[in-house]
Amino acid sequence: MFSASTYINRRANLRNLVGSGIVIIPGNEEASMNFLDNWYSFRQDGTFNYYCGLQTPGQCLVIDADNGEEVLYGTELTMNHIIWEGPQPQLAEKAATSGIKKVEERSTLNDQVRKWRRENRTIHILPPYRPEHILMYQQWFDTTDFKSHVSESLVRAIISQRNIKTEEEIKEMHLASTISGKMHLAAMKSAKAGMKEYELRGLLQGIA
Image (cartoon, rainbow, N blue to C red):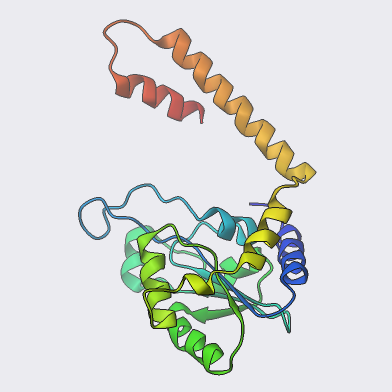
C-alpha cells in the first residue's frame, strides 16, 4: 500500500476527470470454495485497490464528484471474527490509511443509492465482472438491464489515469519482476525427477 497522499491525489484527479455525479467503486467479496468461511485466497478488485489500497473484502468506495465527499462503506468485524482472528483495526482506522475521513455501514448503501436516484443524481458505475456485483447492481437499479448505468466517462477517466505509471508504481513493478525472476530460476535449478509439485510450490512461495 502506498502513502495516503497517493490515494488522495488519485481520487482528486478522478473527480476532476469525471466532473460531476456519484462514483461508486465496489471492492471484491470473498469467494468460498464449498461453504461459508472456506475461502479462496482473496484478491482485491484492481480499480478499488488503485483508489484505496485496502485489502479488506466487502468494502465499497463512493466519491461525490460535485462536493468532493468520499465515503468508505464497510462492515465492522463482529466479536466472533475478533475471537478467531485477533484484534483488528476498525473501519475508520482502515479508511484513514487511505486518506478517507468518512465511513458508513455497508448495509446502508442500498438505501443511499435509491435516494440518489430519487434526486436524479448521475451515478457512475463500471462494467461488473463478478456475479455478486451484478446482483448488487440489479438491486440498486431495480432492473436486470442496468447496462445503461455503466459510465463510459468513468471508464475513460480511470484508463487515462492508470495508463501512466508514477515512479512509485514503476519501482513496485520492478520489484515484482525481480522476485518473479528469482522464483523461476529457483524452480529451474531445483526441479528434479521424482519431486512432488507441492515441494517446488513451497520453495517458490517461500521466495515470494
